[in-house]
Image (cartoon, rainbow, N blue to C red; front, side, top):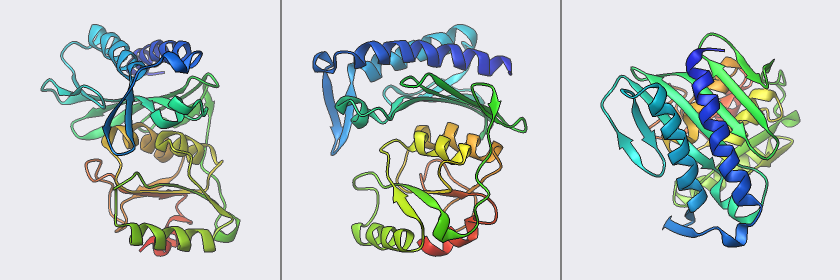
Length: 255
């Protein structure tokens, strides 16, 4: 494992301990709101602080882009952090959320760690080196018949015109084995990378929702594009991902 991944793993596990402790008594966790259906808890903030502390100890000159504390520093190396992707799930005790940490170097995501504290699963990837769960290689599914495929979707509140969302969902559902919406983009992307989902469609996400999971998918043999079939722009937050043969068919469904 790359040394930077080792540091990110240490940071993710430190955050996971905080999250697991908080999950044992959710009634005591303080919850605030940042916008409609956009929640933040003291566990998010404490987990993020723990991640940043570990990263800064190892790489004091690197920049940070984190969901709760924003952007700090000026460097070609930027750590993109989501301390709890799936906060709404966490608040409700629904066990589908994860810690997401990615390192972007000169605009390209090079390393990724996703830690699922509920199941103690660690997903990792470095560009050109493959994707892994608990050090075991993972790959996207080989299904190419859309009617056999499970498709994950993520449409955060206010992320797109409701009519457009509805049309896309109807199209995806009508032409697949089913649509799944977990409430955690990064968990959907790990499911895609492992072959549990066959495709994933999302819009209106943030860089910290996508960066780590997208690299996992790519290193597991998948492709990721925007709705136009071109490269994904993290700042735009739109993504269509699947194996190379399936992707063109999914793009037609959401065009």
